[in-house]
Image (cartoon, rainbow, N blue to C red; front, top):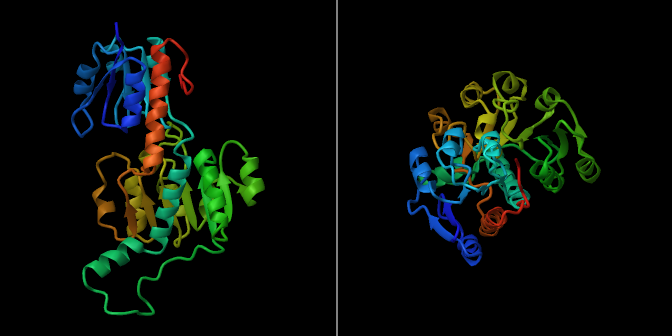
Length: 319
């Protein structure tokens, strides 16, 4: 009897092809939206495997109500949306897609950094509104990159990829991480410091940590007050790493110069204070959104799920 797979949203066809060529019956969510918890449970009852996304909540209740599942492949590098312990207790392997989105996300972090520091969205809106009447010496002055200090919070794959890009702009690098990153230090001259030191010295701070109980609201009122008034905060990791209420207050009171965000604390809800701030660049969680990267993420998830359905250990099992 063929094993059945449910895919929680439409993904690149190459991944569906892998699953079908492996001999599985594949059902894809026909709605162009995230399913509710109950809809996802209903869709997965009687299925053998699930290919899900970071936007799907795979908690104990879901796992208890889908007893037939034999594998869950998350099409994301993070997996804070999945209760790994609950899955492990049921003998269900869980996998992620590490490595493939490193360069695309690092590129987007730089795009946010540059857009925020040079006030590009503000300037474009100004021009499109027909307000541009000619060059002016005080028009949309932003911040320089050359010679400035970049602070990297979390020196994993993406944080490490940020480093060489900074060198191209003549920036100095400091980073904070529980572990020393010798490769980053040797390639870029980066200096490892404590978080408080990084906050106080950096002109730009970019966040690249996993979401855990320790990193939830890692950047809050206290941390924002330690930053320079001319500094910018960039977040392409997870929204809850930043206390958005505190961030809005810090920017409104000019405690920091601005921010660039691709992720949000209560995604897809955006704090209304952020929407009202002209010096905050906001993107709809597109860090890995290149054709090549999203396709590779999807096919990696499909490969992981194929291994699970065959009773093999998937290459990227996380529980």
